[in-house]
Image (cartoon, rainbow over all chains, first blue to last red; front, side, top):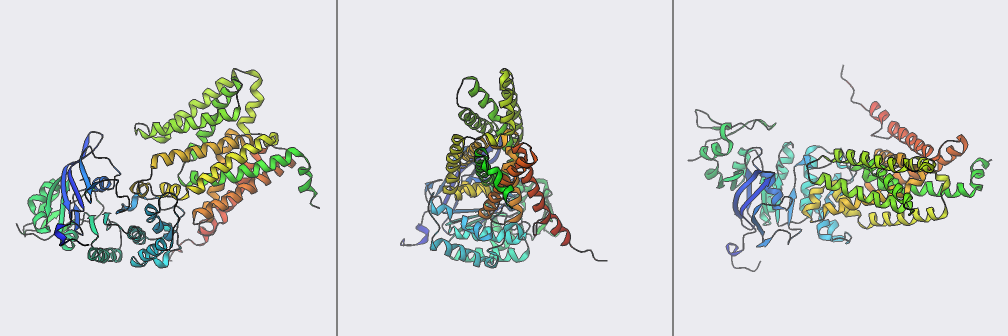
Length: 272
Length: 284
């Protein structure tokens, strides 16, 4: 980069007054935020808050009713390979006859264009992605034979092979083992050092508070945007989670996400 | 000693039939891998039945039957895709409606022409022994177009089948590629009609692919094994038809089914017997 300071770099991602509706129901209502170059943001909110919808809008999978999304100051569709999206694991057909290496190579297809053939750089990126995520030894295995955590890592390896500027991760910690969770978190640290912009959604408020500097709290509309201490307040959480929030006598806040198969989350009382 | 193999091949119609059965077996098997993986068996069956009115109309106006079938198959592929894309009707419901309507229309049209009864059985169940040189060229030509398209667009078709979300983020025209796949399946069905007929072509699409799926772990290998099973079914089916004196289309499909059943039982790792022998042992 040849600009004077990083502060003068344009925001990587600008979302202005975004509205997405399915049928007549508004899934996202007037959401605006900016994510700067190399930032790391965690997206939290109750089930059905529109976290996945926001990601899908950011990669162009759903069309907004109104509002704009700009990447590097350009509208969606101009950059076809700089955003990598790791969807929730349920969205993929795991019985498909492809190997781990095949799946990771798919991350390069966007760069190859319609008729290009994978070259040395592509194979190197695939190899590198698999090694970083610790799945290189599984390269020739069928994806259907892997555990949930290994499948998650394969998808992260594919996202790495895309060499994205912006990485979107939808609930990467749901249903994976602790080792995968730690590998993922240390990968995020490494990518942060390489100035890759990261947006990750989770329903684990404790993890969000502990490992991220910036939190976006949404429930169809944007409820809070700032540091964990600023956003994860009793007031905001009640606003987002409604009756699912219980304040314990010692000041701890309990959020019950009953539609979710994970256990309840307890998070320490934060500064008000 | 091998005269039982050679004798049938002394007839010209058997040579052409054998060639047609192998070509159709291979083509259906390769295209059918996508039918199996995308769970489109019902759609394939519907497309096959939907060509009936096309054939009937072509016959009534004195046109080319194959062209009639092609037009009908493509129209139905588009109609089903439009019905289900709106999201107002589920895809299998849309298929059920279009499929039954097309079949009814086809039978209605054909029943208005008496002398057509014999030809109707040929369309429904195939008559590989009636394949002429022109039919063979048609199979070769359209088959080559279908396979070349699948080869050139291999990566794109792989991604939309495995992970449509990734395909969309890579800005691939997902809907158009899906439509293209439907049209490739429709073309395959049309050139297969003479061999196995409307009623049985779905089996040739699905059965070899299903068996190959149990034996392989990558798509190219699955297609190769499916093609082999398709070819073997074609050849063995025709011999069975010749010596047991049964309808050729049924014989080909029955051989494919037997091969699938064997694979289903003995396939390593995924077969019934393997899984039975390797089931987790209960602790006493």
